[in-house]
Image (cartoon, rainbow, N blue to C red):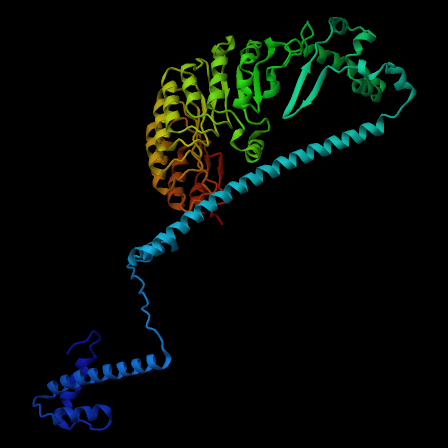
Length: 570
């Protein structure tokens, strides 16, 4: 009779020895059971007697247990409950998340699994929403801090101006006693709903000629100067007045043409006043960059007839920008939260603008095109494909709605001979197929910078894109931050870094609320890959890298910048 622990064999030998020397004890429950077995008249050795004794004892124990359980149920009315046994795991699980997955696979339950899946989806959705709210809150706080500082500065300037500009005899002598309506400033700003329009007036030729000869201008021409400028001359000491006067004259001459038009190289306007700008006060030949903010499809459609006239006035435009806001991404997020998706250009408005700009003289020499923070998808990119400027060096299309279909249209334009050096496609739903299509088209492009952050890129897409761009002769920097990239893609990214000769920047920030990101396993691989790069910049913010990655980076002193913000480095 064998058991797993072997105690039955020892007991058998003990009974065999006792059978040869003395009788078995008859006292106790075991003795009474043995006497009952002998009274049955079953002959045999002590081993057979022991076997019958064990069987009878087990049967008696089971009967006692059944009697006790039936008595307990009758007394207390308790209900039997089956406790599920935990799965036996052969090896220690890597994490609590893995252990939970193994447990759910070992003990399957249809209702529980569906409920857990829904709860996980809700949790992930809430975490993504929380991350977006945190970013928007940070951007709004930064914007409010800037506005507060600007307001404080303006208040201080106004207080200083009021305290210093008290009426005196000298000021009354210098300022002509004329009504304020005749003292018209050079730039007259009229506030409108949603923006401001600047109405420029040219300076008189008599004033410019007197300034060129160094003579005092006539009182009639000084009426175009601001009253504040004359007060500034009053505040200065006598030794500095002549110097300040000569500097102001030279600046005035440098900022105006002979016809009195204002030289304004970088012209920024609101969309509602773009078609109303009187170019008689601004020199159109000196405008090199034209920025229009707050344009929508409705505004563009309403001013469709005046659009070509407004774009035809400047002749040497190198940069064309149409954005949602003039204050950067913070203000754009604020506008999107306040007005929704109605802010910014859509496909139809952007297509009209590109078609109108294509007819201008300066389009063939345009070097930079910026349509960030809009809603470009397919139609605008199709128009851009057929209107691609041959001299375009920078294209910014971040924060739009470009998907795989739009990426194919853009790839067709990039596949042709071009001189594009910078391409920013951040925050577009390109997915793996769109990113791969763009990367294949850039193989023969002299590109220096490529922005693919937050484009729904996965490990598989990162593997294929890195293999496609590997060995690019001109690429110096790439941004693939805030994508679903884990340790599985780090080996291919390391090979991409090592085999791309001019690559000096790799931005690989993690998505904060993504449960699985790059850990020390992939961090060490990336750290070893940059060891042969002199002056390399590596950014691993919000990843799950730790001290092993930091130690691997510390052993290399060739890199110029490493960022490990909000990681597991202690």
